[in-house]
Amino acid sequence: MSFAFYLIICVFVFGYLCIALEYPLKINKAATALLMCAVLWTIFAMSGVNAMTPTFAQGLAAADSFHDFLSTNIIHHLGETGETVFFLLGAMTIVEVVDRWGGFRVITDRIKATSKVELLWILGVLAFCLSAILDNLTTTIMMCTLLNKIIPVRHDRWFFASMIVIAANAGGAWTPIGDVTTIMLWIAGKVSALNIMQMTVLPSIVSILVPFAILSYTLRGGHIEAPTNDEVDDSPASRVPAHQRMIVLCLGVGVLICVPIFKSITHLPPYIGILGALGLVWMVTELMRPKDPAEQNYHSLKLSHILRRVDLSSIIFFLGILMAVGVLQVCGHLSMLANSLDHIALAEPYKYFTIDTIIGVLSSIVDNVPLVAGTMGMYDFPIDHYFWEMLAYCAGTGGSILIIGSAAGVAAMGIEKIDFIWYFKHITWIALIGYLAGALCYIGQYMVIH
Image (cartoon, rainbow, N blue to C red; front, side):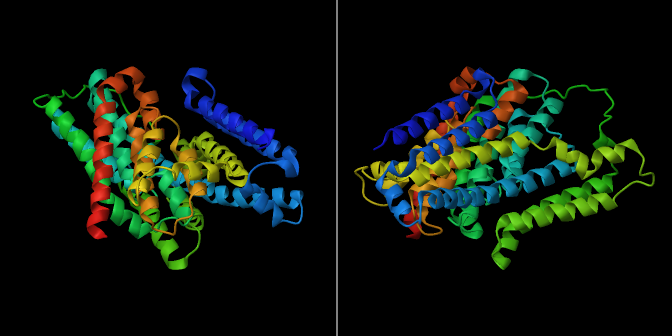
């Protein structure tokens, strides 16, 4: 092995730690990911033909020159990464349009429960269902915003927000558009839309039923007093007519649901469908203009204005981290890791069930996006293999074990100022039991079917 081989590992591990410690370091993980990506590709380019591993040597031998080998791999990984980035950009923009037009209020304004247990299940089921259609990050942000309106006590909100994180992560894991990692597996052709829904919906449901049942026992008999709020809502969404809110909600959710159908019928990449859906939403909202186009409220609802509210830093983070993982794949690091994991002394399929479970637990410590990206480069199983199905479940729900283990958890932590130690003491063990219960459910389901 050359010096560059080990240097790439050191740079990647250091960048990984900086991403995991984003909040203590006060450095945005997108900045770390971009810098890590640039440094890794630079090391690769400067390493020359004496670089890495047998995998690297095989790829280089198939190319005309090292320069061609480098250019081909950059273009290849940029193309794969671009599919995910453009899909996320379109999906996040559509969700932001629905939120800005007040579409989600059609749902949230109807929640009137005062019993803690009843409210817990209402919010949990709502978060689970919404994250399956939208994404777990947006669902968590929306539901945590709702909590501030209906739960006045901060300590109570922490419990509810934590359960929303668990429900949102579980709900996003079983659909091809509900979680970034599932999106990655779907776009890469590792899973098909219908099959991933059939095989992971039951484990995902189990992973929230167990934690919610435990917490329901703890909260039994408790009631919540609705906060008195006499403030006038002067947001742009408050001035949108009710029928327009409903139109935007149905349109936004409808086009998101149609994207997997579009892919199945046309066999085109999902990002083509999501970009077309965004264009349709853009046209419809432009046509729903008020009689006086100069009205200030209308300008704040234009999609050209809403685009400024989209979380571009998250999209840039995905770009950086996926391209960085591409270096590990080209240089052979991931194939070596796969070989080491394959040394687990268990027979199939239990060996790969164990590997998936370990990856899920690791996703609670570090970001699940690079974990899944790395795993996709480590194995070459066919589409809808049980390894990919269980990976989608484990990577999607394992992040709930720690508050920093998922984008939804980080969002809830920022909105509600949830303390890491408090979450670890009160929620981690509940989330871990639910995660393991869902994993056992998938294994049992697989055994019954096969």
